[in-house]
Amino acid sequence: IAENNNYLSHSPSAHTRFHARSIPSIALSPYLYRILKYCPCTNECFLAVLVYFDRMAKHSLATNGQPFSIDSHNIHRLIITGVMIATKFFSDIFYTNARYAKVGGIDLSELNRLEVEFLTLNSFNMMVSVSELQRYGDSLL
Image: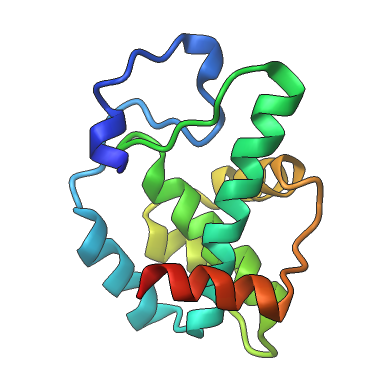
């Protein structure tokens, strides 16, 4: 999806803090494996990230009338930030922002700003019900 969205025309106003100037050199699959290796978390956290992405899309459309688009310029930053937040919310074991920043290949100060932006785009609602997680999990099967 992210690669397909690269070809959509995006106005500069549609860009968020997550939009990188260039596409990261690491492909998405190795990036996800890297996160799992150095900052392990449960499948529940990854499902929650998908819920958060949908909420962000709805929030963006409702507040500024523009869709929130995920593409190759923002997917890596969205994922590392989402996993970090979901792990903090759903797990008793999580790592420092500095560790997530190092694993994600971004500066700590940047990750801290992304965390606030991510929370804002989700209206600070990180709660995901079991039934919602189940529904998203079922849709992947």
